[in-house]
Length: 363
Image (cartoon, rainbow, N blue to C red; front, top):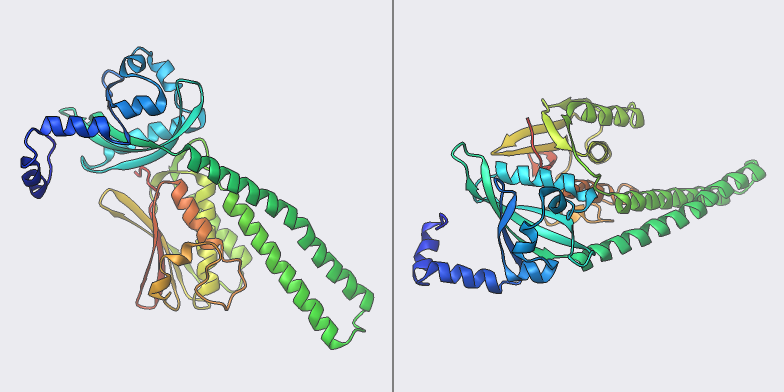
């Protein structure tokens, strides 16, 4: 029997026949359940809901050769599935690792699944030999997200041209007037241009937020060059304003390089725009248990506790002193989610520290 906490064992004793209880549970749950054996390369158990959702019986799955079974996973997701299995093997025995992927139904359609996997058995050398998983179908949710993202992309594309033209017409008016217009009219032109620029930033932010997609595979590489490139970008944009940027020793990790560079660029931009002028900024890195925790820490006014979660939502700002689109941190959170990590805010002793994990391996 699995190693349950003592309180759980006491409760299970009241259930009598544990095997009958778990058989009944697996046969009647709304989730698909499976146990995969790595030595044989086969499932040794699937419950009725697995078959009802994906169409395959246990015998049909195990009649497939490894190549045919692997082809049931969408080509764009297969590399992530392999990385996910490795992550399950590295996790603690009670560590549940989630993943979303597409699986080919017996009728040929692609079905989006969200699985939660955990190591079920290990070899004498400690390597995982079996893993247990449960999954639910999320096809409707993923298709709705894709539809919303497509709409937002099209809207952003259609809005870019009008905002550009607004700025161009303001310039043409200034040239026509040659400074001869009343001061009130010139101030009005400045306001129109500022609002048009603000709209441009908003549209670009929406395009970037809704256009973020997970690449086919991660790359295992040193993080330092990616962070250095982000720092150089920020120095070029905020020359004469940005203070010193200190960077911790960064490891090798499994990441999506372009997305990670976007993440650090946005966090550093946020630190410059909202932190104390010229104050030092720190890129942090530490291992907490089996996890690599990265972050960007800056000196500045603390963010109100009530905004610790909402600040990552689109269009939310901790202050009205800046004219940004309010999408920078939303983009950061989306990048972290693409890595299957998590992001949070830590404020203490006059510092604002955005911290995150990447849900992947490090060396």
